[in-house]
Image (cartoon, rainbow, N blue to C red; front, side, top):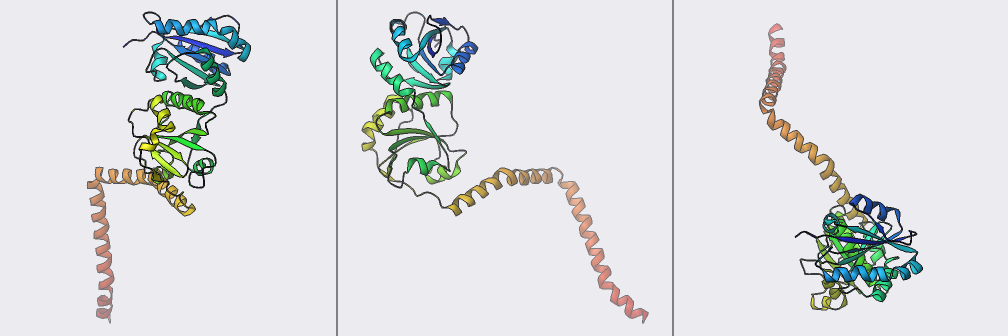
Amino acid sequence: MHFLTILVSVSCLASASALYAGSVEEFDEIVRNQPYAMVVISKRSGCPSCERYEKILQENLKEMEDMYQCSLTIVRDNAELVERYGIERIPRVMFFREGIPAIYNSPELLPSDLLYWVHKARDARVQILDDTIFEHLTQATTGATTGDWLVAFVSAETPALRAKFEGLQATFMGYATNVAIVDYVQNVNLKKRFKIKENTVLFFKQGKMYRFMGSKWDAKALVDFVAQYYKHVKAEKIPLESSLFDYVLDTSVRLVRENIEPLAKQFLADLKKHKTVVLIGLSGLLMAFCALLALIRGSPKKKEKSQ
């Protein structure tokens, strides 16, 4: 389905009048060069909700300028951005902080609610965790004094995933719930510790962990899961952190697999490819060895005859 998009960007320290950017390159430049940029994605026509969203933002532009020193930029007809950020419902509001996107997940656009969410989103950031800092920041097995943690274990981070979880972090601000992302391909110890085999969301709460069972990571479903539905999932004991020895061992194994194993495979491939030459060479070495052995064994007999 082809979506015509209107991207409304509210960017800090910009001019008071609405600006227009007609390409992805222009939009990216606006987002990259401004500390804050709000975006609403909608259709150009045939969408009453889209028209309402644009009108609301236009009407509240003055207040946004006064509160955040921001202005309005409109970008039309850009389906590429819809795909990039995984927009599933039109219209949709996004907010960029120093180039990092966050999706506003509310089904309705109420100016007061939006401004409050933007206020929280300015300081909200998803944590990117790895093998070395996971336990220190989450304190998953040592009392969870840093709060609850909703952690997405993924094989690769994408702009769409980041935008969704940044939006969740802004929503959870003030509720002692942190949102994080782990690349389990690069962090093999966490992958092994939590038995991660595919993209997985785990919720860590008060020394227990709960697996989100939905295959589709819908923002509302994740919010509801953190709020109450985790209670309907079997609580799991959080595995202990690997020891230093385990960490060194796993790291050594990974280095061997990444560096030595490919060389070994290449050697076997070359050996198979040139097996005739190798066999002739080995046969020659074997014959030479046998001849040398016969010479050594025959030496005493020759000595005895000469005597």
